Length: 288
Image 1: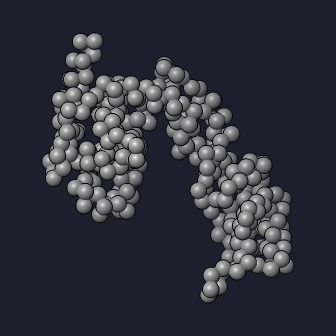
Image 2: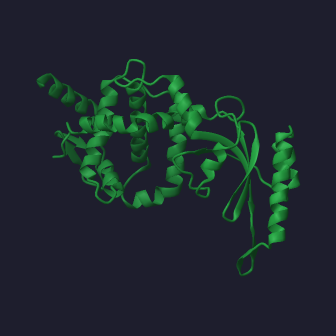
C-alpha cells in the first residue's frame, strides 16, 4: 500500500506540468498536487445535473496518471485527428469557452485525456489485458451493429410559402415508383450514381448507421437497413420520408469504415466493465 501511494505521488508530480497553469480560474489540489484552474472550470461547467464536478476532475487526473503508469504512447495519426477535432470544437465553442476563462490549450488537454482513455481501453481488452477481446469478435460485433450505406432521401411533401403541404396520393405513388425503379437498377448492376438519375435532384450521401440510434433518421431506419443485403439496394419509407439505400462493405474497399468505428465497437462491448475499472482508479484521488 505504501509503495502504491508513493507511485501515485510521483506520477502526480510528473504530471503537474500537464495540469498546472495560470488564469482567472482558481486551481484545485488533487492528492496535494495542483491542477490547473481552467481544467477545474471546464468540468464544473460540463457537469450534468446530478454529477459531481470534483469526481470528474479526479477521474481526469486518474486517467492521465494511469496512461503514464502504463507507459503508453499516442500514435502520430491519432494526434493529427485530435488536432483537427480540437480545431472544430474551438471553431464552434471557442467564444463560449473564452468567456469562462478556458483556453484552446485546455480543450486540447481534455480531448487528449479522452484519447488516453480509448488507448487504455485498448490495452484493457488487448491480448494480454484484463478482459481480452479478439479482433474477430470485434468485427462480428461491427457487422451486427453497424452498416455503411449510401442513400438518397425523398420527401412525401412539398415546401410552399406557407410551410409544407402533403403530396397527393398520385404524387406519392409516382415518387415511390421512381425510387423502386432506381433500386431495381442498382440491384441489376447499375451504379447508384447512374441509377439516381431517375430521381429529380437526387444527392447521394454516404454514412454509417448503428443499432444504438441514428438521430438523423426516423425511428425504425436501422431495422429496415438490416433487411437489405450487402451491395444491394432497397427502398425504405418511414413517415413523410422515402429513402433509396444501398448497403456497402464497411470492412474493406472504398467505403471502409471499420477502422474508424472499431473503438466504438470495443466500448459498446466492454465500456461498462471498463468504466468500473476507471472508477476504481479515480477513487484513489481526492480533491483537497
